[in-house]
Length: 427
Image (cartoon, rainbow, N blue to C red; front, side):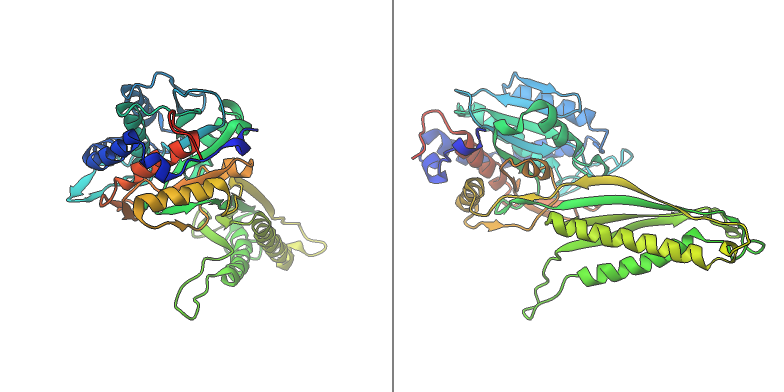
């Protein structure tokens, strides 16, 4: 593996190089150009499984920055290779193409001063724009990486996409053992670095029964009652996991979460339901804890269904058997993963963030493209793309461009710290 051979440059070493210093200053001056790229990307609808138009736009913009080796893989990821001096540990820089919104949402950015409003304006149109500004700065100032630098727009990062883009990328396009650093550009504030991938399991639970007339067949096993019992027990599991407020008033993040997010069933008000269902989202930074909560919730459902089936008069000896059928369907699964806070990549990212913003913090675990490389043993971090914002995954999402230039500056520094710069040697 190449991963052990990276000798990270320091941000101070890089910034003393005249071309890098000039590029950092230029990126600050290019705030409006970066926002224009961000707006253009945001206004191209890109739901998971529908990222083609935005991907084509990104490919065209990368080619306009002088990159010839730009292509789209079989899954839809956009991949661009920056010419390097030699082979060695690759540095992958990725932002996701898809947004959390369906195709019928047609974003139109509204701007008031530094504040931009539109669904998807920050997550992750800003990350994609930062990658474009990185490519532009490399060309503008003739900054040639020593080792391969690969820029990627991934598909399927959000929700039902289940990280399908980055899964394909590391299974079929880039060998994990060839990667020295994986930089996911997701989130905003450039002072935060995340080095843990939050494990996720999403499932749909369906219970089916005999149905019938609400009066004539009253007493038959009822799928809604069965899952109602289950939901009450899951609520108790969730209550035990709930975050607590310490004496200073700070709310600590829970070790795991267990959230029922959708529920439904039945056909008419006077008909016993033949089917009831709910969907659940489980998360934990620790794989063992995630598995523990997963087992607990499933056990609660199975126990509740047995209890409902057993209470029916139709289930007594000598009568017709009215069974309930239970099924679990996995809708998505994201492996947990992390690297140690003192790992070279984490320390390099924090140093770069500190140099750019004046302070740096190791953030809480998050669910993003970095989950896959981390789960495969590839060093990876999530870095911010600059600025600030809120209401991500909501139609009211907003983005504040104040200090937004810090994101592209951070990305330029960290990319070159990892991939090296021809003409600058690590000490």
